[in-house]
Length: 465
Image (cartoon, rainbow, N blue to C red; front, side):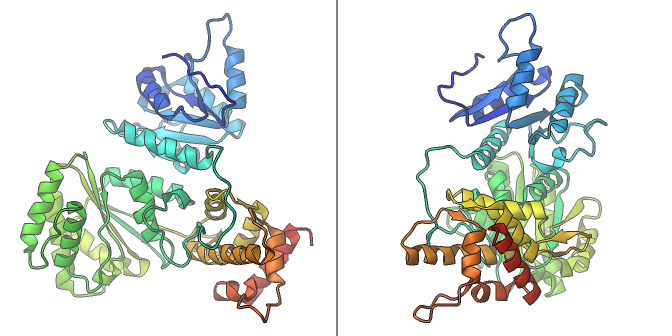
């Protein structure tokens, strides 16, 4: 494979670290992602014959924006790969990992943060899906130039506000890479996975946008329904599987619905399936007979399927003890649990800055950190954490008020910074308009009095006031 010709300066340079035993796999990866200014360095492909190749390797390494590790069983044992990883770690390079879940993590790689932080599972036979996910993430973090500039407007807000993210908003969903990695690994090893966490932590968004974004072809999410019954949940799953086909009749017998689900799995194109059931606290606080019927139906699907199936059940943490009782009863040795916690400071910063960047709007990192400081609370495991819903409430109000400010000034705005927020915080309110100060309109519903004062002080500090 010859090196591609790139006419213009690359917008991102990627150093690919891999075992030569995986050359075919890595060349396929590079063919998939090397486009639109994305340049990959691949040894020995990009080293011309010469007495010494070390200077070329050193130059390409130093100029790399991203270090991409392809971790397989062979790579885990390779001394060359280990040396490159050690060098990348010391140089504080951005490290992403493509990993075969079945590959044993060797001693050198064990407990390395990058093996969990930005991970892309690679399943044999589904390489194209993995490569597409890597490319999508590159495009999100290093967007292609030449996009039309967009200012802050009322109708282009990238933050959903006090509601879950909706399908189609994958490009502005950030901050949950670690949770997604943990989910994907757990899905590969267990038939039943429990995901729980406090209210408004972002469970629904993680399933509808996050997980379906990385497993689009084989992840099915029946919408939560009120007045939950086992039969209703199974019919909802069948309706989701049926797609554009006629939905199942509400009078259809549960046995028929289960048989149709098993038939779909058998005839489907995917090698494995993930069925997500969300907001299930509605079921677990109801009739015990319905709970038994639901888990019996799940057992029928898992035992009758000729392909791997994972059932993912999401609920509020208050229902954990009730759920565990039934899972232990029906699946004693084949389930696991994952708690979805509030966001860390780093994750919260991504949730604030990156969605704005997708609209070509610069969100000042100092201002983002000021918002986080005002919103953070002590977590159950120690340290500070930020509720995802609180971030969305603050950011959507800030965005909309800056849009109103731009209209009033008749001047487009492409930046959110301390000056802008200070102006909003200090607005006394115009009696001739309905616009209220940011302090009253947004923060009062999210922040305590002290937190609001901290936010004001931090924002003023951002702009040197």
